[in-house]
Amino acid sequence: MAESSAQARSASRFTTAVSRGLRESAIIALAIVALVLFMALATYSPEDPGFSFTGSSGAVHNRIGVIGAWVADVLFFLFGRPAFLFPLVLAAACWGLQRRLRTESGGSRANSLVRMVGFVLVLVASCALTTLHWQPGVLRQSAGGVVGSVVGGGLAAGVDFLGATLLMIAAWMAGLSLAFGVSWLTVIDRGPLPGRASAGYGLAGAHRGMRPRAASGGRRARNRWRVRRRNQRRALRRASKRPRPR
Image (cartoon, rainbow, N blue to C red; front, side):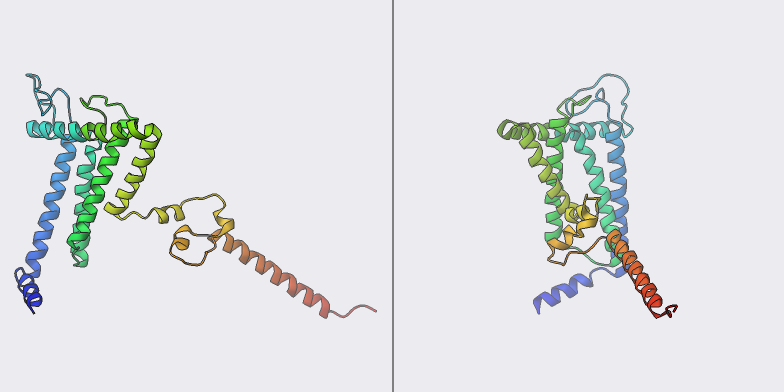
């Protein structure tokens, strides 16, 4: 009874129109923040004043101004080039809110928490891989920032370069599945695998305990073979029914 009354009070707090307006306002705000953040990162200049550099007396090159220069310098200092994942995840959040607005369904807190953990895993793995495989360029830290130097450098010292790369690729794939719902078995199943048409097995279907399914090319070949055999049998029957010349 207490839970039902609490749900009724929370449901009657806002009307449908107000709830829809709040969600649309959140979508617009997140989209603007993502665009501003992307512009700040894209127009970053190491000569602008920021967290790690006092800057020169010249004009600020960042298109978002001094605040944009500071935000870009902090993100590049901490995360390196994978800092561009932040506007990407904000855009993904806009897309998710738009889907909820269309279907009128809300996600649970546990689901949102798992997606956040997945994004953190993708971010850390991206920073480590970028540090291991790319040069910093104009960045003052490594290509993966402080996070990439700590995680990537620590793993490379413990399990060597190849082991650190493989571990971070596995972590990146797992984080992408948690954050964005990517099914790698489905990706592999739909991709062009050698010998797949002859074997006729789907990896995703086999993982779910389903029966092996033949590829579309194999089905078409079998259908053509059956039609050819049927025509040959009909021709043999007609030939056997014809009267033999005496």
